[in-house]
Length: 359
Ligand code: NAD
Ligand code: ZN
Image (tube, rainbow, N blue to C red):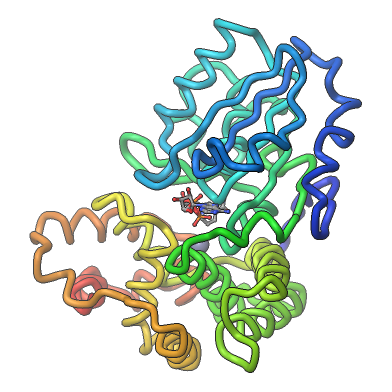
């Protein structure tokens, strides 16, 4: 396997580092139309963090509602067109929020300089020009969006990322104090995304020492946060989970995700189910593929007293299940990793249907 991936250029880590944001972006302020666009999870509207934004005259703040549907191509196009028409090209964009807001920031950075709809760039290396300077500030830990090469969007025909070297953030600020207010269920579901990233990246054909080294450390941190003595949503565990998320992202960058993520993309596409929650629902029934991981996951669910719904499939139509299978069948890179180059000989649509029916 050969990969040649770009890393986040600059990373600041530590309690209270969010307050360095103004200083960090200052040298970039003279670029383009000399204003910064701050995309902020609307949970922070009216909260203390909003007052700490380093806003100067001319800057813009766009509050993003992340509690509903996942980021869409139409949403990116609309925000891009509106700002270009009203204020021109920003000097930079800062995404402050979870995977949703960070992916919107990454996608916008690219779409500010690439003409047409973001729909045409869903895929690998389809973007033609470098985007504008972009900064990510996670406020919930787990997706690894702060470090990954992709900005996942749902479009008219698929859920797929804008994936290329230019997608990667120029700068991230990892300040664990920003995650202390995350609701308990989101804290669990999003943290489990990291856990599942590592189990999948370390299990398939593409696993290697690079991804295993980051994966092992990330899994250990997840165990400290969700299982071992001192587990739970505490300030020290917020620090651990933020690093687990970052390491989990690096683990999968040099490997690949697997069965759970493939099935999850199908579910999110058809029902709009949120990524991390969908992963938990799906991983819960994947003991045939990841027996040790699923056993430990169930122990984490039990210990943290989290509700993972079952029997959802009783309300699904055949047509919906077939559509989910279409979407997940197309994710060949995940199947090659999880099952092998000859995955089409080993896997049938019926097996996928059987898995969906277990949920
Ligand atoms: P999210 O951004 O969707 O937010 C989940 C909820 O938590 C929202 O209601 C939000 O308002 C709230 N929230 C965020 N921070 C908070 C805080 N500090 N206090 C209180 N509430 C807070 O969460 P997520 O799970 O991080 O992101 C999911 C998205 O990430 C999906 O769209 C998925 O496709 C994407 N994703 C991207 C990658 C990638 O590599 N780019 C990887 C995995 C998932
Ligand atoms: Zn994921």
